[in-house]
Image 1 (cartoon, rainbow, N blue to C red):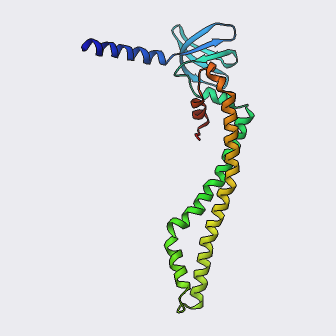
Image 2: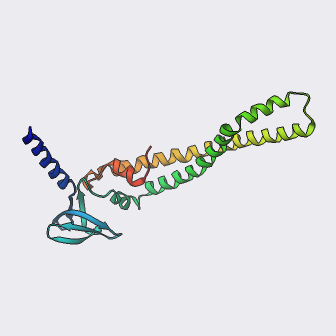
Length: 195
């Protein structure tokens, strides 16, 4: 039993050490393996067995590795028109959806009881005219807020639909990116969204 635990421990350590490696195939055919330490706009700094080197991004033909940073997906997608359209439409959709949700939910959560009470008071004949005007104006704000919230929510739908369409296109274009060493899941992480 001790042998099995020892072997399992050694295998786990070996797998963890191997997973941290990132492999680069350069344009000239050479291969470099190591741990990515830092990234700039133009280069990766990689710690290899022979020391720390800088690898120019334009010279990389292919990257592989479990611990390959997901930010390379962003650099590949920055110029993609579908990715740009996705980001723009998603942000615009959120710009309508969040205020719409606030306008819709706030009266329903906090003022629902008051609205029901106000409607009940309007049916009574013992309330004076000024109180009725106050109740009517309060109910008007209540229903106006809900109505505007619904309108904002409805406006956000086409933006989210367009964003989803362009997101799918961007992912389809980069399904081939398995050669570069990352999957559509890492694209979702790089885009910081999930549908």
